[in-house]
Length: 214
View (cartoon, rainbow, N blue to C red):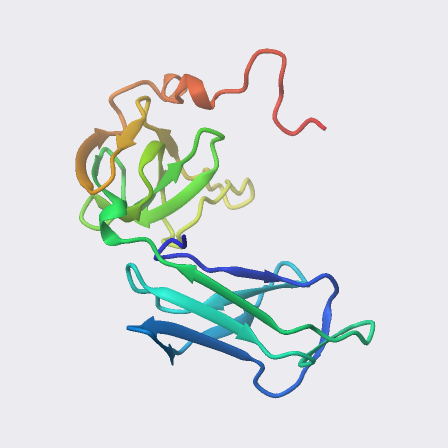
């Protein structure tokens, strides 16, 4: 199943040299008929062999992506076989929603939703102190709030020459658990706990390990 906000990835074995014509086709199933729907195939800017499928997915929809044979030529002169993939988008009832009110930030900011590896899953801007996370997969998450003084929707390090401090980062000490088909409303004051004591134990490196070591 596909998440309603997902961007499926197409990854080739070798870099693409040439695309002939319009080889891609995306369909949505309506009753028993496959109907064409609009989409885009965009080249990934960070990975040479990767392309992204961008479309507006509907809850519970069944889709099919076709690629005609011989239309994609690799850097080594090889062409593709015919490809056909079908997939279904999750129903709306399979998701959770988190509505988080954040107090204590000095100015604009955003909130990142983290997994147990301390990796961001989603981020949302604070609008009137509220971050609204829609269509989340049920599970346990952690929260990190970041001041965004220049409103570029990312954390910025300090600049010694410009006498600018790094943007402040705050962790919510407690995790949040989300259930299927459930809305959760939480309030968090980022100053409730001392800064050095905020990061949840589950997100801290275990004894004997150090992030960044090979």
